Length: 114
Length: 222
Image (tube, rainbow over all chains, first blue to last red; front, side, top):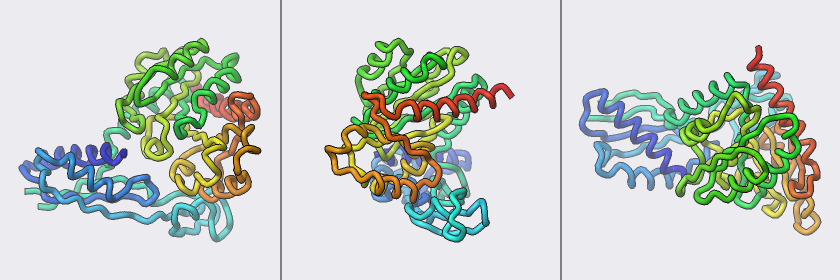
């Protein structure tokens, strides 16, 4: 259940940014999660609802965008989208020197505040 | 009002991890984050690795468990400094815990720190501790289908140790299938079949680790 630690990271970053902007209430928090992380969206919402209580994010909606995985081959430059099981080898030249472009994100994009 | 933040959610953990990493690099210490399920043989593998490398390198161990000092005591009984971290329920180690543990060690006197992460095939894979390399252990009784079920940990590992290979005749473990799925997830990580308690295969794994320790030392010296 490491979603709790991740939810805490979201909450503390969102509150810091909201306070910096002089806000008193957070309405929405937009985050991006790569599909290759071990984060379960349902568990994250559950953790979020548990920890936002008593903070300025008490009523804040957590909007989660799941981001697909893409890799690029270091040998031939081919770029492709993939699931968890087809990212290790280039489908074009069969090379194993591949670089993950997206899929492991865990980031806060923006917040909506008053 | 909408405000753009564009920040990593685990930014606090990642910043401390980067600080840990520079500290290890400055001292030329190689730090291994060893991840596996409970019961896969992490402590036995650590003890076998210590025996294989203790004549060449000064080693310390950081033990992560939800509770108890059992593992640290086993390592200390082996004559190796060990720090026990009790996470008190948390399913993985974080970089702040590593920083506190490292504060009690003499980095100048060490070549290798082995971190035994909390027994778990899921959560440790998402947390940077500032380690030099993440390595995982799967044990034969857990079954050859685990890479399909827990892909992330196989993807972030720089080497995969397959432990308890001496029990392969007893369990219906398909090594070829295991290797093929690991390859589909991770094209480069070497797979080391070992039996930590019997000693089989430990030398090959230890040599790979020694190569990485030497590379870290060379980088610190340059």
